[in-house]
Image 1 (cartoon, rainbow, N blue to C red):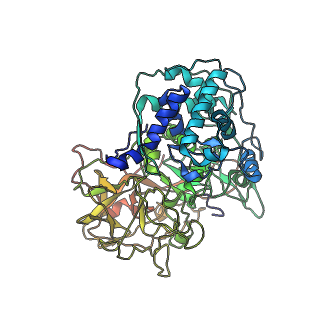
Image 2: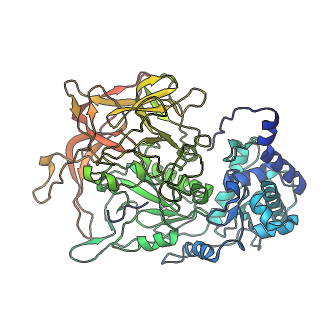
Length: 640
């Protein structure tokens, strides 16, 4: 969410037996039976369903695009008119965007997409059944694939490779790049295989078929020349304005010359907390904030708004903005099953991989992080910082897609841990999804809750910066005060039975971490601790230059340590050092000069959000599990 005004390794599943085993395999058997009935290779049917829904049914509830069930069949007649209009208006080509590069797929035939009504006719079943009955839904999807294959003039072959064109037509996109990427993902999954427990508890396995050959790609359509995007993604351009408003004010981003004048070190993941059409209007308003890219929920289409060399206003921190790329994902954090689609995850991961490679951004959770992990620049700005993409964003899956899976790097008794719950099984209680205090429906989560003692009846950890009046942390879905998230790495402070304590904002914070279903795994790396003789050191939300680094014509910003304690003997994990810098802002036809300091800092995982400490205040220490000869940490450039 913008600060306004301001590839898939299989999951390990424990075996079950008897009646439970039969119940947990119903969906698996449904795929087998439907594939046999309609003469579709089972691997094709299952991989398409995974790409549509990750095999989840969402209890018969539709996605934002009106898709139902494991096959995500689109109910074009059942979607309310306003929702259908909203989806149509969110397509590039509206609200000032350039036209989407639509083109028929190679055969050029009019082929039905994953249409629920058409599927219902093919299997002679009521449309309502396909919305709520997973068996009917999968049968309808299989029938659609077979009908598409026939319409394309292709045989109902046993060879999955013969179905590439039918698969490319299935989601109904007319964008050549998007359709080809979708089919390529389906066949990559067929070759690799997958194993997952669905949100409904169904144990589903797709055996690997490494011998299935990749499809030879044809050249995609031309793109707007301004777009910075990997070739396999459907992308277009809708520019954000850079213009003066009144009384010396301007918007809605800054010209820069990155990475020449400042390094691009971070990629910030947002969700919009609004439908995409309104966000496309917002980003074109010079009085509003901006971000670099938007990604549509229904099909993962990418629209770029600000060149990556320029600084968008997206995170609530000028320091982070100057060093980051901001990506907005259409959705609401309280409705993940509706908005956080697999196609959006995959488009986003492709885009981030491309950007990370281009700018040398490390693929870890101190460089690829959420808006909810951005440190507040000053103490008084902490309560205003944003909470998206929230506890239901699947960071573990996202990093799998990035090709940098989150995993143990040390043994279970290590002095560092990476938070890593099983997303599907980890369902902490939350409130606030349907109004203040209203319980949220149980849902897989990346979040792990923190307590003051090693017991679930203990008070939650408090955040004095977020709630300066002394209010207690809550289980509200937007309250970050007492939780950590998948991929974040912390120093171990203590252990007691099934519980682990970490250093968190200056205190011990306990979370349940049983050996049979761990919520964290061992990690190796580097930590910082106060230099000998220092009882306490300040933690900052930005890394500013020292006082004498500023030219006479530049006003020095005031330092504002965060209201937390970093005491002697405590440790916090660091994955990089950063140079100190500040960019004074003014409207100009050239990038503003960057003030660089000699002072160096380390970025640390201090709480749910990141923080910075001066290199001169700390010693860097390795974990006891760190591999011999592991590279040390440099505190970033002091200039360029």
